[in-house]
Length: 626
Image (tube, rainbow, N blue to C red):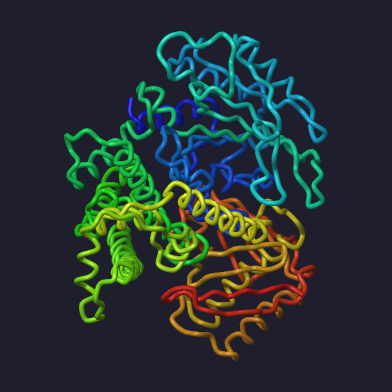
């Protein structure tokens, strides 16, 4: 069985259990500031978990492309990836714990043929917010799982959500498989890494409020997730996810083009190949997303830039400096070829993907060259100091000669962790590249190298903590924040989309949006700055409609009929066969999941706070309701 077979088997199994199939949503979420990327299959489904009816019914299943960056430093070990595919089945107020657990057990043991003797599970231990999950425990016991194979763990391990500051959440029950040959231990130890988690059933029965309370949801939901790559690793009997059928061809291809085919790899070379495999796959999917971004210094663009540059750094460490842009292009083409059957948009956007990879590669190579010049300047300083200390004649005209003479000597240099960090921050030079350059190009050993690198990591960790704290403060809210303000601003976003079309022309299309409970942000294609008169017209159009106390209606209809009726859709977005169409009076009509307010009378006054460029041909409006 390969991964395509696994995904199809999963979908067909749940179809037999009355689930409708749904498509993978884009990697970049719409309207949700709580996350930069779709990190789980539930993210696009938050409105339905909060009670909005799904056009395909109460039970759905599918596979979702995901990106998580929280474990980026672990990428390259046996199981951690930044990009992965997640299988999932969901119940929006239909079945709950017992039924979900029974279907999971049946799929693992009957469909995949995994022996019960190799399974173990965890359940929520309970705390002051929610009781111990006896219901899940009893369901597993009834299916033949020994009580010694069930561990009760705290909220830290067995609770999911909310995705942002508020929203749906609840206890979960995780499934583990013993990955080694032979019998598994009779008693399950969740701290033993030989047990690999492959599936998680989340029972969303609570909503976390802004004041930190957990209140029962109006409907009890099931949200599950099973990583394709981890399951394939287990089914194939492999030690790492990089040996599975989709990742191994990419890994082996990179190994060949950096001239390591047929050689015994060092641990460092193997790690570099794994990191390049993961980061290039993640970058290709971000660039090939329906809501794709480009490398930049903010938000999703920053993560994309980090992935690409980290890939280049490891190509440098594999000593392929001259061929980096061409190798990056070849790797991207290989990934597109591997995945375009399931994700044809990658093939459609191939030229754009390659162009952005090449632009970022050349930009970073120039950055690295600046870093190498800074290193040379530092080493020249050591060479000059050495000559003066030893009483040699000194003339700046011959400084290159002095450097060459110094390079030929055996020596040890003292470098400062702060200098390493500044070089990393200003020129993008990873510390490993800097130390390798000093040792290889200048034949110098580094005094107390381990201590210096530890001090660098301390500086870097502090920088990460500051950045993370800023991100956590910034990315709160989202559509899980099902407040009246969020509904009003979501409604205003649709009205802004229509007003832009009326003022600027029908060619204007939405390129992205982001909503908190305080403001809306809307990106659209347009080639120039808006005039004061145009912004005033947009505000007037929206406020005029608001003042009419227009009713907001929702109708379910086939996608083809919705488009034929004139309903606006997001450019490049995938929609199910049946969709919800929201109409705001006679002003606008759009395909959307919701939520919206029921009437414009409660919205207040629309006001544009800022209009700016965010990329070539893309403008951004930030607006509020007062």
